[in-house]
Image 1 (cartoon, helix red, strand yellow):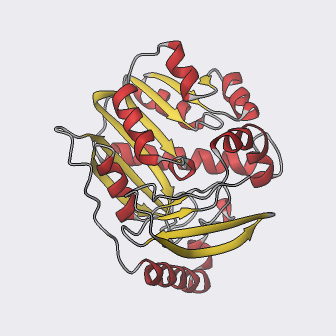
Image 2 (cartoon, one colour):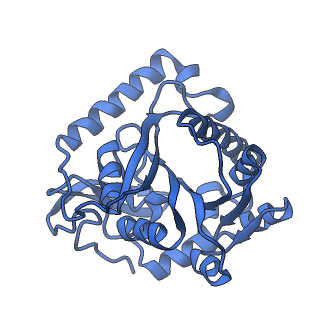
Length: 295
């Protein structure tokens, strides 16, 4: 049974108000707004054990209608991997020795990073069909972060979580765990999430809906310094900032993790952002949604 979230996943305050409620593919989805810090999060939501089962056996079926990767999905993943490589080049990342992609899906980002940096790459992917697909293409992929830890792999100097953090029930502590146990002291973490102010992000699997502000605050509280933070539409749109991509490094010294800066006018920003999106879709349909990656 779904469980209520009694404290904000960012600031831990108990005060919240309903922000959005809708049906998503047969699931009732309710999102709350923390009235202390402004984070938007799903409540009630599936328990952690229910989430584990969901990602292993139901997630791809619900979202794509099949367990294995489709041609459309592979096309989007290939284009997204290229866009992420461009960001790494833009911020000056020129050497990677050991790379992990959490939520590695079909392994196309693993392939791109391996080719670009000539480094060791490892994936973590709970979905069996996608994991097998990547393994059949020569990638080393673990079922979970726990199985990766048990294998005794050395720490990574780049970890990516591409459209993963919004699925994590406790993003602050998850990111702390990565920093303390899996990331080298001079390593980086690369994250991409849907943008609350442009994306139809209220889905059953999205437990948190991030803005630039709340993503920055989560990283800060988890002990990271943000190097790059940019909304954009790649690979699906030239105009609509559907996603937010961030590159961060472990903070030295660790910041005061008790302070979270509030974001204001969240409802207005959401309404304004979606209205702007609708205008762009009407005026510039082929640039708002690139035909080859439409949907």
